[in-house]
Image 1 (cartoon, rainbow, N blue to C red):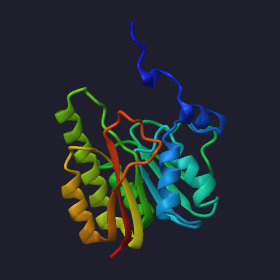
Image 2: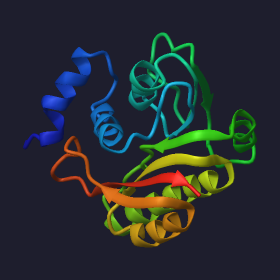
Image 3: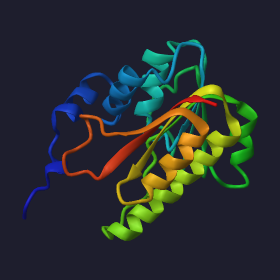
Image 4: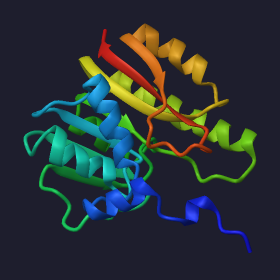
Length: 199
């Protein structure tokens, strides 16, 4: 049976393990923040689709540097032991009637970050449509609960309406652009939409 390249630990997977992060996705946020300066010490940050927790842990360790607050929400619990003291973990659907008010109560936010992805089916149309829904919902959260001059980054699958969402983001932010980090796998059709300086 053929072995998928994703079954093999690549450079970023090995590096994440050695540095104590649960997933290689940490290096996507690292590059995004190095080039776009999304988060600074003292910020209040919302991480949507946070599990297993690499973006939350990196934000705690390297971006807010223990001074600020991270609200981390996902359908699944974080794989962090211990959960950092700056983190408020909320397990559930960020867009549900039960959970959304809890996110709102912890805001407003200096930054909203999301590496959220739908459960993939292998059907490109279904998967991109689901990804577009997640990106739209995070954008709505930002529209309502991101502070003036705040920043946002969201993941979306290419072909999932990213141009329409970028158009919306350009009305919300002084600058909005698409970006693909080096840590994204070559065969991945994910892309990140970055909004800087909320109007």
